[in-house]
Length: 143
Image 1 (spheres, rainbow, N blue to C red):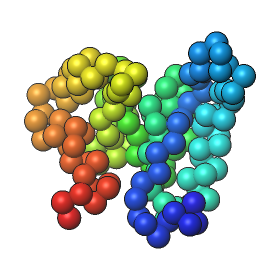
Image 2: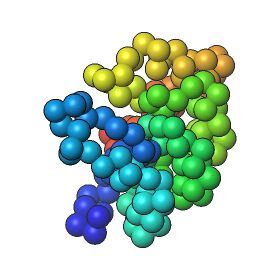
Image 3: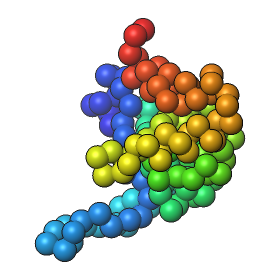
């Protein structure tokens, strides 16, 4: 993290305990490495680095909100989260630190877009912010 920090680009990490590997590769997985406690220690130790908590923690989204929401250097993506959870993420992280995510090509983009549209409840400005403005600002695109 110390070597990466000067580049001022975000670090995306898998967040939440889950198993991804298929049978032939199952021996490679360590789902516990996605525990939110590890994430909290990481973002606390490197406040100068901006982090994206992938999938907003998957099934551990509640822990992400309680343990990572207080850190100004953490953003979340919305992949695999419901409309209600996206609304909660917006309340906890604020509209500036929530990013659209679909986990494509593994996830499906259309339902992920529908979830954002429903969570934004016809607020075109909020929708635009989540779908691309936040990511552009975070990655310093167009600045």
